[in-house]
Length: 100
Image (cartoon, rainbow, N blue to C red; front, top):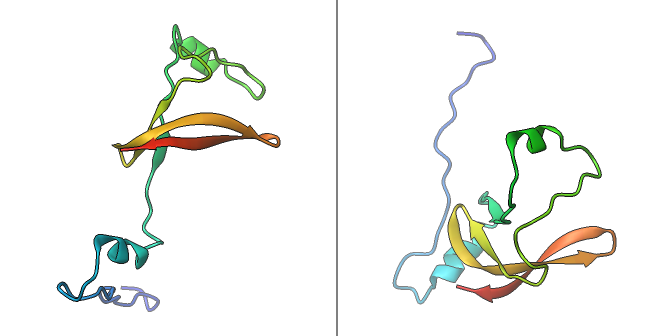
């Protein structure tokens, strides 16, 4: 064992005791650091591995949905709502249109 190795104990996270009038929202408010994966599913028609390998900066990919279609929005693969793309300045953004 190297001299730089040391033992790390379990991390303690304090949460309110149940029955104190707290909500699930209060519990989530205590964990803003909790990592998650946010995905928007965008259907792409006739897209091949060759197309994927040919992608470069500035490439345009044709989608299989109308520009006003709502797209599923998921957090850790769980559907949380529907969204649409918006352009804000020179960036692409996602606007939540409906929550599940």
